[in-house]
Image (tube, rainbow, N blue to C red; front, top):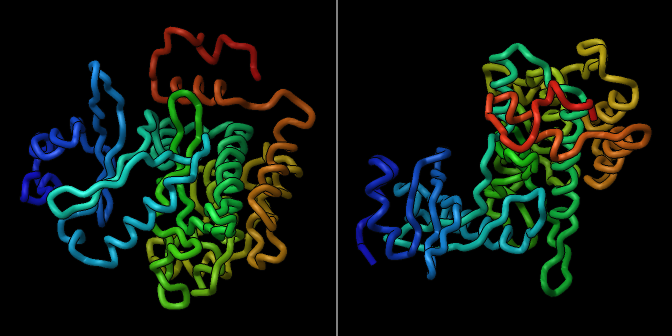
Length: 336
């Protein structure tokens, strides 16, 4: 194994190839970048000309030698290894090369919700209400699974994602919606960011508990999921400020509007769901992701044929101008 570290964080993808070829991964391109790591598209190679497109997540070189970051990365991999659900990005392998850890994950061909929202802003186009509710209902479904997960001994893991937001929600071209990045999640025996001392998560997507350094439980993921729902509906995060501290103050004190006054096609049923998700008192909020999912699905399907993965797929492809030889144009299809 080569002794040099993964300097590809500062150099072209080509410099990764000779390192990962020995591990049977062909690095293709960088697809995401954060403060502590990067994600690359890669091809996993096997016998008989086997090829599978995957995503490879790497810790930056400068953080690789710091035990805290190693523990967080390993903890994330251990946590998500057994989270096998259609609405959660799958993790396949944790490895180490040249002194740096890497994680091999499911590759989702599509966009994250931040890109999805930006495309709507560019076009001056609102997202249909039913598709906004559908996307959030799928993440609620994934959280229902994660929040109820137990270990092999039957102990409840008490998983809290703590970083729900548009960057961590992916929409595949096939219409699948997937939650990713459990890097700051807390769970039984897998919590490295001590609550009460640090704030985990992005300021404009915090729950009130996170914003006040309180101990969180699964309900802390539902407030930011409500924020994501309102952002999909309005095209903006009403709590966001240029000042991080002000964003946290907005989470804690800003009056929650009646969203139907901001977008008239938000009906009373959906308004009620939003208002309950954004209750600052977690005892008044939805008490589980399953409860929020159920209410969204009743809203979507109780009196009509509601949206599907296929409808979202057609919409996404038309939004980004992707020609699909199989599905006809959305404008020529019978509305679902």
